[in-house]
Every structure is written in structure tokens, then in C-alpha cells.
Amino acid sequence: MATVATLRDLVSALVDSAADQSELSGVRANMESFFERVADSSELRDVLLSTVFSIEEKKAVLGDFLEAVSSLEITRRFLLLVLEMEKVSALLGSREAVLARLDEAVGKVTAEITSARDLSQNDVERLSAALRAATGKTVEVSLKVDPSMIGGIKAQVGDKVYDNSVRTQLERIRGVLSPS
Image (cartoon, rainbow, N blue to C red):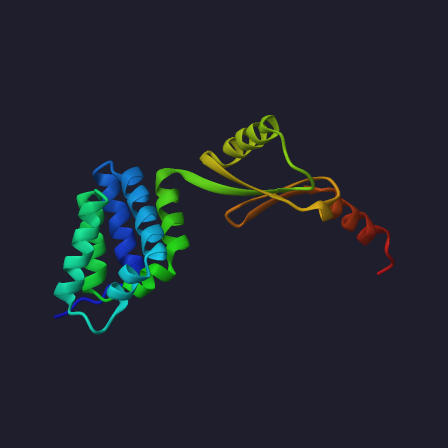
């Protein structure tokens, strides 16, 4: 009897196996590299997604690629399984979700910080430390400037938003003062 596995099942198995082998960080780096290289190489992407090439030809191309970039054995086995199960398209379309799942397993989150002006390195370090304390995880910071905020900052970590912008505070005051 054939087993039907979803991409989510495969990624969960990858994360569990990588954790068991203490290879989460390496697998995360391998997967990010894979996604970047496939995005940069239309030839590689075309072969992996093609219906013209046989599975054996695709496996040979993918195997050569993974060997050239020195991927871990666990990453190689995962990607070959994804290929065999014809889930490459789904994997490529799930880049952010896959990397986020690996980041979560590693204990890392990305915080998108938006401010009205460029922040100093000291400000970024203080915000990163505060977010690390709030989340209990390693925080990778992504910075954006939005002058319409007037002042303050807004930080988004996953689906949680910490908004201390002047624009939001003014909107709250306006809401309180406006007749309903």
C-alpha cells in the first residue's frame, strides 16, 4: 500500500531527524542555500520541475548539485525524497514556511522593525535584546524605515506586533476623542 505524505509531513520529519542528529543549523543553512541556488538558476529549476526528464535524470542532476555545494547527508536524502514524491514545486513555493519551521526548531525568530528614521546600531542592539527577552529566542532583525510613522517603532515577530509608533498613538487618541 502506498503512503501519501504531505510536504508538511516531510518537513516535520526533516526537522525531527536534524534535531536528533544535532544538525538543525546545518540543515537550515543547506535549505537556504538550496532555495537561493534554485531561484538563481533557471536551468536547475527547469530540470527539477520538468516533465521531460526522467526521475533518474533529475536525481542525478540534484545529486551532483548537492555534492558540489557540500550538503549534509540528511539534507540530500530529504531533497531526493521530495523529488521522488514529486513535491519539488510545492517545496519551492513553501520556501518561507520551510525556513521559518527550521528557524523555529533552532530557536530563532525574525523581527521586522519599522521606524520613522534610521536607527543607530545601539538602538538596534537594545531592541534586539528586548525582543530576545520577550520571545526567549535568538532574534534576527530586519529593518525598515517608514517616515509616515512620525516617530516610535513597530516590531513584528511572527504574528505578534509590538506597536509603539506615534501614528498609532495618535489614531488611538483620535478614536477616544471622536464621537461614536
